Image (tube, rainbow, N blue to C red):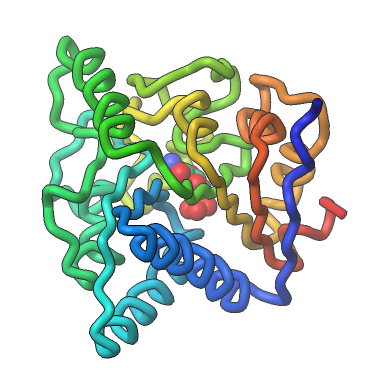
Amino acid sequence: MDPPAPQLRIFPDRAAASAAAAALLAEEVRAANARGRRAVLGLATGKTPIDVYRELVERHRRDRAAKSSWDVETFNLDEYHPIAHDHPVSFHAFMRAHLFDAIGLAPARRHLPDGTTPNADVPAAAAAYEAAIVAAGGIDVQLLGIGANGHIGFNEPGSARDSRTRRVALAESTRARVAAEFGGIDRVPTHAITMGIATILDARKIVLLAFGAEKARALRAALAPPPRPELPASFLQEHRDVVVIADEAAAARAR
Ligand code: GLP
């Protein structure tokens, strides 16, 4: 039987959509913890989830004030390669700034692909990353953004359904989009380490965020059958529990 179509939730603006996404993540954490389990979150970077993390930090603060702590372990989708952990544009730095430090997440509970791994050691490090996800019990809920070219994580167009964590070349359009943050396109890494499509689809629940008119085409293409490597986000159609949280602008072509 075909999996059910992704559930599309449309909000008037990014703030309302971000609040809804944060509420959903916080609920996953509470539900897992209430069952005596640590919650395992798959996390994304980029501009899209920034307000989600702000809301999540606020929810964490309120729960802490109510003497309810969160037991959480996190796995990020991707990281540039090579890049130093303290590079201001690294995803390590992003996560510290937007979430990890504010919720006091222990370093041992934070996992990201390592942008400092020597090339020759990446296959072993990637296999270890996959094994760490399995050892944690698998990802309960994976947060995703979508690239204007339909990428998820750094799975650029052409990525295979069965891809796993690996080193990938970045699309030129992806590099161009972040050139200003790096101070020029020549300073943008040419490669990254990313969870694969199969890694992402192993998560028990997936929350795809799409905000702004620049994502409208990619979102519509992602929801249109069939799943295809040219539009990596379209593989989400093969998952049984996908919630798309979009603002009106991103959803304009998707309905
Ligand atoms: C980035 C990340 C993706 C992200 C996407 C969209 O490069 N690797 O995980 O979802 O591109 O980014 P943004 O949220 O800034 O639009």
